[in-house]
Image (cartoon, helix red, strand yellow):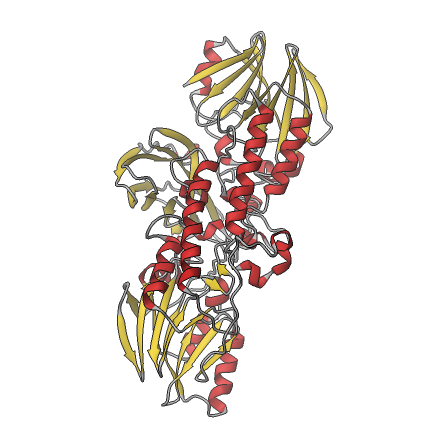
Length: 610
């Protein structure tokens, strides 16, 4: 790795992140120290004493991998102090594990707490050696991020965290997921206004350079920031133009009303008389009075189906289809399956999530476990009474999603889960893995709808049915193509999905119960979103007191495909309270296409007893 010298007393070490080094003789103050190669730079500079450490924000990739000396003073943003000194309160709280509608804090949490000496917020100012350091609150990439303004050697330098990567670019898109009028779940690019305000605040201080945590040292801050604002505005406009949220929450987009270059919102149409809609559940009633049920999000659904039986409207439930894994569609399934032990059917990609939810960490995920009797592959068909059913993998609202074409009674009905409304596509949460590109994500879904030509499309949250014209489908497809380009321009990767898909590298299973003294297997899975093969190097980072060093492994992943590395991790004889569970966070250090990413993903081991 390398380092740059910006002034007589200020250096920047370059590894997977940039670390600020303020030198006073053989003493230093470090900003965002991370990575094992930092020590080599300190040795080259003749540093023998680390006096102070500052962190711009709480993410693991800029806070781990460097051995902290004993008794060093550590300063962190006041708004994020808990995520440094008591991060166990995150890992051990079920609200940060299940039913996830809030993305803040995000998934790059520290694996273990570190001691905090000081907390800083806007207005703090102090002297250290040759520098005067002042603090700005600059939320955006995280809610509590700060910028450190360093006045040194007659120059003003700004350490901006991950507010900006380079001219017109940010490190990722998914970290800007934040709710404005609703939860974070509905807030795609919702932190863009905070990000802009924070960068405007930095810009007003007229620093000579910006030093981002990830990215290039920026020597023309005004031009870099202006270009970023323009890029974000273009991206957000292309998002809103076909967003399904315009149907659900029209007041969220008042500044975009009456735009001729946005897709107009379709009118609905009444569903056929043999359908019933309860909550997020659609029910098909056959001529025999048998019921085909889709999704069950609550006890109330079971109660209402029982009432339909009591009223003679249906005789029995004979098949059950699960559209996707979200909690408002699966929470009631265990009770439903006890009450109606009929055949449960779902798409092959959905099946593993709902059978084994602990293996995943995804938005809106439920701990409810579902029994699946039949797993469908794309295009599988079967007959149910007078209806022909055809199942499809349908990676719309979420990658883990199926669609169902139902033909009969002179209609072609497509049950799209939560993937469409009359206003467009439901891709408002980056954590759902809404992939961009030819033949994936909504591009795949829209081309399928165009091919199937359904007379009715159904959303689980919307009472009326609807459809799309070919011109509207083409408009959505063209907009997705435009997004793929402008989102790629916004990030320092060769494809937009690296910034959109926060699960492009993931651990499987995400969480598993282990037994002390045994070995356990885990995979690091990766989706190569590039058009060329990409190498991946991964290494699990186990706790120091385990006395185990697990070697790194490397694979090459083919273009536009998934790959994985298997690891076997030996578990020592950990002593714990037999009446409590111990949750152990295992981060994985990742290098992708020769780009080090630090401790980029994690898995959870749960030790029950000692």
